[in-house]
Length: 71
Length: 158
Image (cartoon, rainbow over the protein chains, first blue to last red):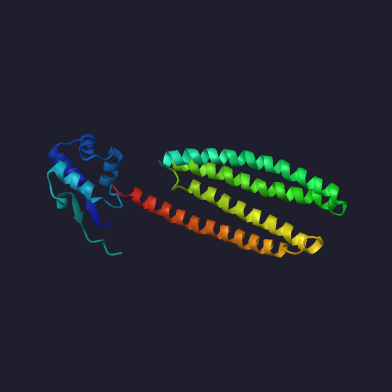
């Protein structure tokens, strides 16, 4: 998929563990793992809102778009 | 509210199940009584009783299936493939019951001289009603299937 979630970088920058982050955002640690692995099909605006509030960042800081390599 | 409805429905299902067992006993007793009074139809007592008992048996299986669906609703697992299998069973029950009753009525029309008269209308009502309930079941099954697909897609949303 061309949309990439870059949670690792922001989590490292904020020095937050996955569990603390999951608790603060209000999602399960396994869903955080799904986000980090790029297996998420979609993300709710409420989840994105909570992530941005917890990490004090903009959506663009955690979600990046890249063009698919030509097949 | 829905919990209360579900509990009341379970009570109703138990009452219906007990009533249907009673009806199975009653129907065979009634059939043998008719057989004694009209010896010319005595040969039909056993097959017709069997058909009636089987028909009520279909209703009993349907009641048990509804009980199972209710359990799935209560545990929040109604939008899974287990529910689909139960709905399949429900549709099969309706189909078997329709074929059974239509078969008995057709046999009555063809081979029992006293059968005639309103039996044609009963047969028409049985076939259209049975077909309608089977088709309704199929349509509802389609709805459940799309709901299951939607639920699966939502599970991928974080």
